Image 1 (tube, helix red, strand yellow):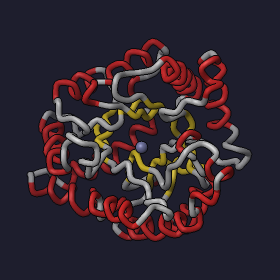
Image 2 (cartoon, protein in one colour):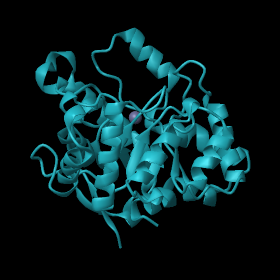
Image 3 (spheres, protein in one colour):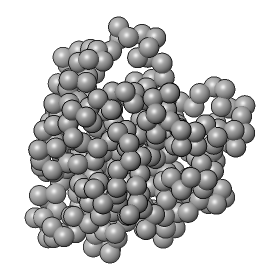
Length: 317
Ligand SMILES: [Zn+2]
């Protein structure tokens, strides 16, 4: 039996169930909730998050990994309340997204790793909520100096606590390869590493090369198409099928990278977001999985990808 940290306390991995591997309830920036509360309708966002996750629970969703970090305005009190209200288990993250806090640039990775370990073992912002995953991010053009410091810190925190790492990448620039190289230098077990956003491009040689390094792949930007030139959901589904056909259904996870629209967004933004993904956290359940079935993928393989793989990733198996 393996237990992991959820926002409501320990959960057993065997109870994770149908899991979306990379999501957000809501994203903003560090300090916004407290400094400029008038900018964001926190109550409205929470109502929306509860309604949409309740709906997803009714369609089978049991767990989400919320990879929001301090620089994405992580709000663990919100996660707690939404998890309690909906029954969807939420795993919170430590680590950093792209906007590395300025003071970190002058710190050694060891010092930052201590902060991440504290959020995993003691808790986040005095709430007692413990992180269950470590998030790191690099984007187009590759890893910046500041991002490399936190990437090494994440690696060290993973080695010290056996906590898995989830990355944000830009696959058209093959950024996952750089992340793997640095995490290997820090002695990280590649079985503990999830290279995210790996379906923003359809280059199979890049993806199979990453899998040969022993990592997991997050095909976690369904439906996609929001960033110009990236694959649409049908192509992303085809890519998933290709990886299954290549015998790698044991190393992939699917997700949306969804967050509920901010209630103070204008109607035009709300509409554009809805057009892009009308099903929110249910897009995969309603569109991608039935399409995979049509393409000949069995329910057993779908269960492997949506239920068994997240569990095995967190168990380190
Ligand atoms: Zn994300």
